Amino acid sequence: MDDQPRGEPLDVLLDRLRGLRVEGIGRGGPHTGITHNEVTRAILARGASVVPRLVQRLDQSGFDEAVYIVFLLRELHANSAASAVRALQSRLGTLSVGRDLTLRMQIEYFLRDAPSW
Figure 1 (tube, helix red, strand yellow):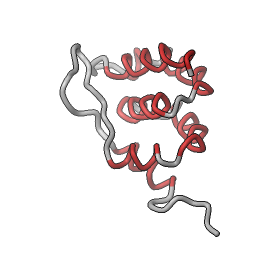
Figure 2 (cartoon, rainbow, N blue to C red):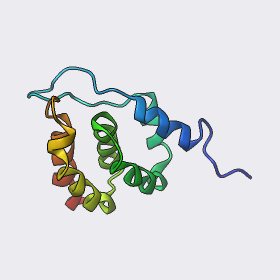
Figure 3 (spheres, one colour):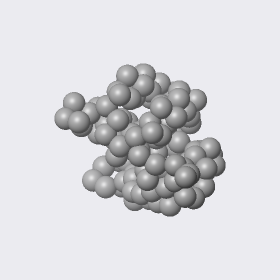
Figure 4 (cartoon, rainbow, N blue to C red):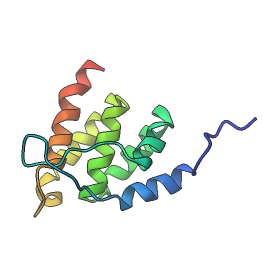
C-alpha cells in the first residue's frame, strides 16, 4: 500500500512554492495579506512531515519564498522551526530591500503564536 499522498511529489510542490510571488492587497498596514493557494494547500495537506524540508529551504530562500514558508510553518504550528525563523529574522534587512513589510509581519506572527502551540 502506498503511503504517499496523492498529487504532485513534494519536490515539485516545493519548486512551485519557490516560483510564487507575493501579490495582493494590504490588510491594515504596509504589508500584503497572505492567503492559501493551490500550492500552499497541497503542501499543507502533507502535514507536519514537510516541516524539516521547509526549514531546510528557509536559509536559501528569497523574499517571496520565505514569506510562504513562514506562513506554512505557522499554519502547521511548527514550533520546532522557531530557531530557523529567528535566524531568518536576522536576515530581514537584506531580504526585504525594496519590499514591503510582508516578511517581517509573517515572522512576527509566527514568533508571537509559536509559544502557544
